[in-house]
Image (cartoon, rainbow, N blue to C red; front, side):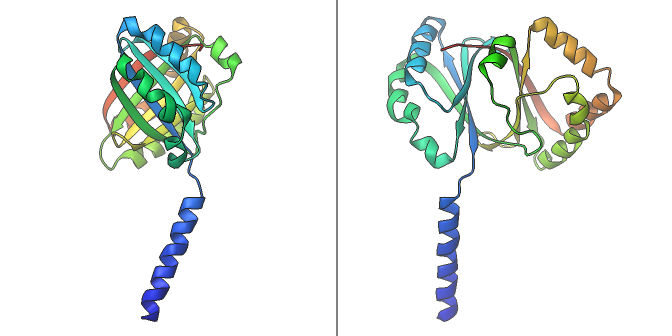
Length: 221
C-alpha cells in the first residue's frame, strides 16, 4: 500500500512540474480565402493586434489566395487563451474557405530570429519551404542538415527551422527572407557552388518523401 501511495505522490509531483513549466511553440496558420474576401480578412487581422503574431504573408507563387501567419505561444495552454482564438476566430470564419494549423517547435541549432520592422522592410520576398521526412528519419535528416548548415549560413540565414509537434508529423519547415526574386536566385546559385552544401542537399533529400516551396510576400497590417 505504501508503495502505491508513493507512486501516486510521485505522479502528482511530476504532473505539477509539467503544468507549471512552459514549452514555447510556434503555430503556422494557413488560410485559403477567396480573392474578394482577402481585404476584409486583413482588416480583421489588423484589429486583433495580436502581439504574438510574428509575421503575416500572402502567397505569390506555389499556391494562390492563401494568407499565412506565424504565431508564437509561450505554451499550448496559452494558445487557447489568445485574443485571436477567443474573440476573432468566429468573426473571420465566414471569410475562410479552408484553414490549416501546424504546431511547430524550433530546432535548438536554429533558434527563431525575431522579424524586426527593418528585416520585414528590407526583405520583400520570403520563401516557405516544407519538407516531409520519411518515418523515423527526422533525426537523421537533422544530423545531415547541421553538417552543412554552418556553410549555408555564410551566404544567408533562415529566420527559423522548425519541426512539427501537432498536425502532419515528420514535417520540417524553413522560412527564408530575400531582398527580391533575383536575390533568391543569386543566393541559391551561390549555395549550390559550395561542395559542402551540395553534399548536404544530397544526403538530406534521401531522407525526404516530399518537398514544397511557396513564395510569400509580407503584409503590413
